[in-house]
Every structure is written in structure tokens, then in C-alpha cells.
Length: 177
Image (cartoon, rainbow, N blue to C red; front, side, top):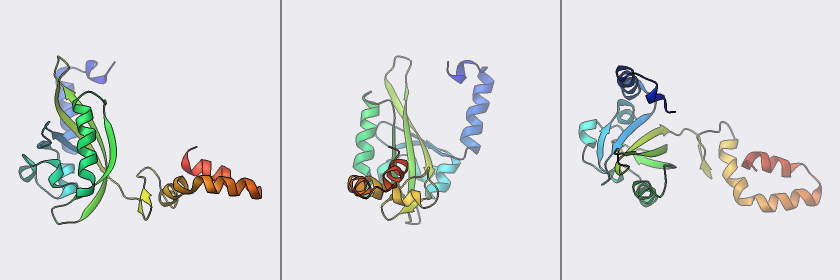
């Protein structure tokens, strides 16, 4: 049972207000036409725009051009009910023109009859960026090497088996299997 069913109405309001005003993740409410409906303080801090500057603009206006199509395609899948949510690593272009990486999680808000109303997006800055990609959950060198191992893993496993080394186990550890 979701937590909201266990809370009294005033508690639900207090929890939502606390998360909205003081949460450590950016939160954006986004309409079906991809325009910003509301954004919290943390999201404003991440992208450098005020809520007033964002309302009515589409998320595509601050998303790196190379990431817009994938973001819109996955958003359409959520709005159409094909997917329950989506996550992606993407780039925003801040008000000052700086490109920043974020981890994005998007879920739908539905009306009582189950039809789509709007998106709730949770945004976390990504700090581990490397030449071959990134993973916000990893720390240290593995954040930079995992994508390389995923691309070159088959050769590494074959080489490891040929020389009888333990690098195959290392590959499986780095790539998660």
C-alpha cells in the first residue's frame, strides 16, 4: 500500500511541501506538450533559470539538442501508457550556457479514470563524467571504465581465457555480469 494512504491529509500536504521546498532533487511538473508547469527550487538551482522563466517553455529548450529526440520519444511512451516510467542520463544547457549532465526519472500523473494528466520529473546532477560515458552511481575510476569494458568485453573475455588470467572475473564485476 502506498505511503499516502497511511497519512492524514495534512500530513500528505506537509510531506509534499517539504519535498518540494527542501528536497535535494530537482523536480519539474511537465505538461503533455512538454512545457514546464511548475519547477522546484532545486531544479531552478541546477539549470539556473527561475520558475517564471521556465513556465510555458518546453524541456527541449534547455535540453542539449542531441538528447531531445530520445527524451521526447520516451515521454510519449509514458504518456501513451506504453511505459510506466523512464530514466535517462541527459544534458541540460544552463542559463549561463554551460552543459551539465543529469540523471532524469520521469513518471506520469494520471486522473482518477487512469488517463494521463502530466509528467513528474526528478532530476539529479551527475558528477562522474568520463571520456567513454558516465554512471552517476559509481565513484572513482570504475565510473569511467565501465562503458569501455562493455564495448570491448568479448575480446577481453576471450583474451583472458586464452592466457588463463583472472581478468574475465574482473570484467564481469565491472559490467555487472
